[in-house]
Image (tube, rainbow, N blue to C red; front, side):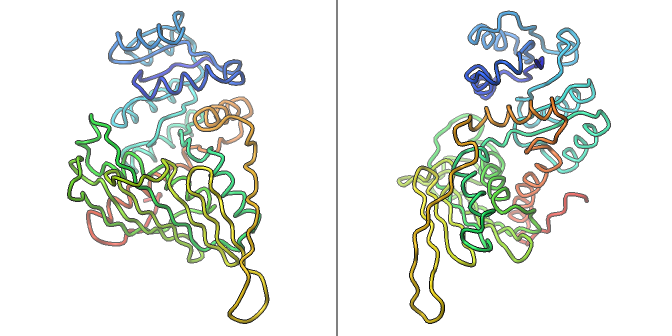
Length: 345
């Protein structure tokens, strides 16, 4: 069983704990032995509320790792602290699973990848949306060739989200805090890496955010394929799913998913002429649909990788491309230019 320290005891951390405690598989694979937070009272409240009375609590990550002999660190700190926390945990010999985004800059992301490589430890990122059954089903549909060769993916995200708090004062709030989920899922479905992006960002009239509550982005992929994103966090009256609404276009047909339970796949049949029949095709089931989804699946995949040495699906060497999509979109929005995406610069 892996011994884990949870770094950061805010609201998101409680979601991680619930995912672990709610899964028999995870409860038998990992034990939370330490909690780290600058606010010790908050850490104690989390421990008491989730039956973690035996966990070591402290504000110094290295000290808690040493006291607990931890093998794993779950990094749920705010993005500004991620580089220091993840880097410190990797250097201490722990495998690290971090919240998104993996870093706040490409330089920091590359440095964390180098640190993990030097330490011989795994560094992975929680991208829980790609473990949702609907996203897995779309990925399988593309792999099976059901709609032919995939040429484009189109995503709509429109939600009037009244969070209050820090988000309302963020720069580029939609792109930085939410869009990475859709970008990463789209990249997963396409099965490729982004090459360039053009993005227009707005803070529409009536927005209760200070900056960047809406964005439209076009990502170029290999073989002329594109991923388009239309999003707003201040669109009232007709919300999409939190998972976005999807249209996949292939050489033989189109697949639709509303982000909830509605799937539709239409494939053109017939030989020549202008009139062709649109045949409705069954959507394939999601792989392992009966197993956990979301956070629990990401954590399970990470822990399996720690045990086997195989790379987890959301390892940082791959997830850096999703971060590059976000940062590239922001650069494009700020400059008004199409931006090439190159993670090695």
